[in-house]
Length: 280
Ligand code: ADP
Ligand code: BMX
Image (cartoon, rainbow, N blue to C red):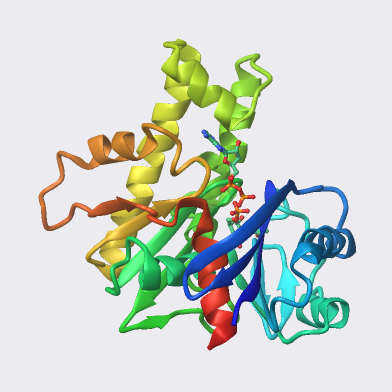
């Protein structure tokens, strides 16, 4: 039967009723970033009320690290989750159904693998959104790792750990911050539309983010060498962004060049993936 699927991101909450890879109905709310886990669960419960009686399982995909049903932030700037929040137990008590909890990008990787651009092959999924998250599927298995870290590409620091995680230099939050630093008070969406309108400051920010995302993709290709890297997230799927990443990679020899695909489930990858994980 249908699964109640919840995707709690740093910017938005998406809830849906999902059956066998299909979204039957969905509803969304902006994330109240200051509110905390109880209030985020309140918001999800409120959205889910319209489907009461229609599901017997719940899947929750969240930004942040999941280990043994406990939820923690790696980057509190993406969302400030208190350390080791017992979210699976909290959600089970509230929704009175078995709850499966996983990282959002890992869940989305699984969704794209089964029903989207992953085409059932080995793949890396990269979401470029509030932060940057990732998921790895290899040999038909979704990797979660020892304690939930597997795929956290945005948390890598490369050779400049003092500058913080890579996502703080190319995510949606970075784009908004870079805009503020040039005197433009807008979010990533605003920066993309200014770039389309030909504004130089915005063009510069978008192309910097794309060049950095391209470098991250080449590193991931070296690590796993997957047949494809699937790109999702509000920034990743913004018009023109994938083409810019591809352009930045065009000069690479074919053996080193990542094969990039846009997430076929677009914003629904997380809810479809977590619904599948909850059914298993
Ligand atoms: P979440 O991080 O909550 O999962 P999203 O995947 O929608 O949510 O990512 C949110 C980020 O994507 C924000 O920084 C937002 O400004 C940006 N974003 C959303 N839509 C667009 C768009 N059409 N163009 C550019 N940026 C976008
Ligand atoms: C990261 C990290 C990841 C997450 C990724 C994308 C936290 C709170 N989140 O900073 O676990 O997968 O962001 O999350 O440490 P999104 O909200 O941008 O989709």
